[in-house]
View (tube, rainbow, N blue to C red):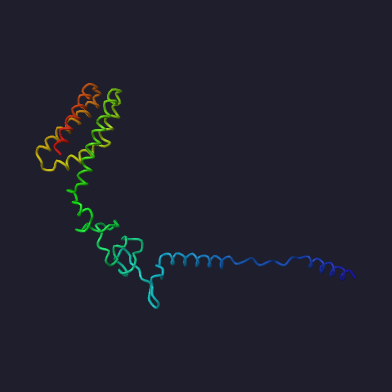
Length: 214
């Protein structure tokens, strides 16, 4: 009787046991993720088959040096490897080499009216900037004086050098003007107010004399 009661208790206790649940396999999902990621990388590296005809492999060109030169470049050479495009003057430029039919050459290049007018406009702007100096000098803003001379005067020097070319009279007038500007810079460094004002007036006079020659 006691044994029957014991078996009955064991049977009822086993009814409350929960069967273990199998954990999902992470190795399978990880392997799937790795394969998908690798497929995405490969797809990004291999050119798309949009340019391929039926039955042909995809066509691509790398810098116009590797692959099919008749197809589009893969992010390089700006299409300079295309037939009829012409050679660019630099591998990093989208522009072709300048030829006889280029607008720059048709308008005279460096001897063109427009280019010379741009250089003369630099001289006109130089006069405007020189006229700003007296206000700085009177307030002893020496940094502003020197800053004005260096901020734009590099363009002035380039314009004068271009316009003077091999003309002796122009070169002499150009040298006189440059020396006057250097006096402004020197006296601003020395904080000599009177001499700096005199140099500013001299530079304007020398500039006007030079402009008459060009």
